[in-house]
Image 1 (tube, one colour):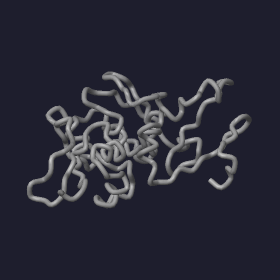
Image 2 (cartoon, rainbow, N blue to C red):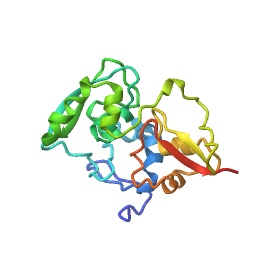
Image 3 (cartoon, rainbow, N blue to C red):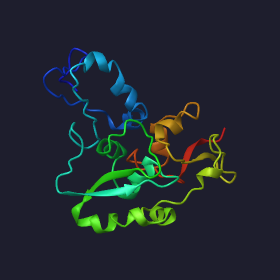
Length: 211
């Protein structure tokens, strides 16, 4: 962001984009609401809204031009990360479309989702599918989250590495925080992940070599 030379981003009369490095995307997502809320009354006293950024899009977010609006009814056990993976959209877009400030959704809530018009027939079936079918259709495995331990994943006895099984609500940054000396960059490198958003519930991640 070489255009900002005074350690501030002017936002009185116009909107200004702020580019965020790809390697920081997960860390940003983990504290996104806190960032937007910081001194909100002071800096946005006029009622101006903060434009939520999206990776790979302009600072106003992903375009919905040419896309079809569908609705998904939240079921027990659903999470924003799961729903976004089923519809191949960003969690940040899903939150923006439905005015969701945190990651809280409730059973029975209807979520608006914009999908490519030429694939709307496929995505329209997701709302009535069973969890296992939705996971298989999106290429994910079905995880038993209720039985999963709240502690960091145990090591794979047959391997030289410690592994972690992804749970609902996880992202690379939050997983890295469970282990000393591990960063989200380390996780991406060890698991050949090029897009920090593309992890799924039930996925097994290599964390670090066993000590």
